[in-house]
Image (cartoon, rainbow, N blue to C red; front, side):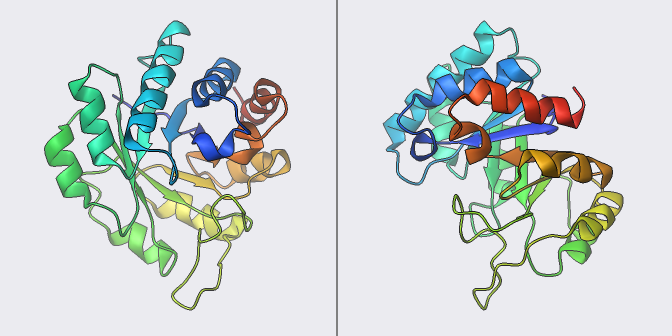
Length: 226
């Protein structure tokens, strides 16, 4: 599957203010979002499988199964379980300290979508020189410090290093594969982010925590230019 990371939702049960994950996914995809990642540090394996199943059904009901990728953060076991159960999960997103991309590719096959979080330190050098033969896109951030993932962009000394639009412009130009950028992204950030030339933006609370997820997702997607 060719992944479109233009408008990318990251969501788990802890982000939805008690609403079903699949409902947030449905609203975002209906509004124009192009990629969905199920990410949770609190849900059980069975709860994550259930959220994947219901989200996949929501995407299918919107006629977007072939164009909107459904990914899982970190949990290769969840992706494999979903495949065994006939649930359409398209791939995985992993970080630098998660299971290696080579293992993900081995078990998920050449058609799966695999995303990798680029490291905070020496970001530009890394994306220029990394072996990207096994991955489809990089993720990076934060644009701003974010309570959703307080360790996002944290260096070895515990300092959060946010990404400037100038740095992202260089990153977009030098990365051999698309880059999706997030971390505290708000509506006002979308236009300058697009001007950097990166592949897309990702959000969590801006949609999942909104009183009206569809309306907020639509504003973000429209601002990107859908």
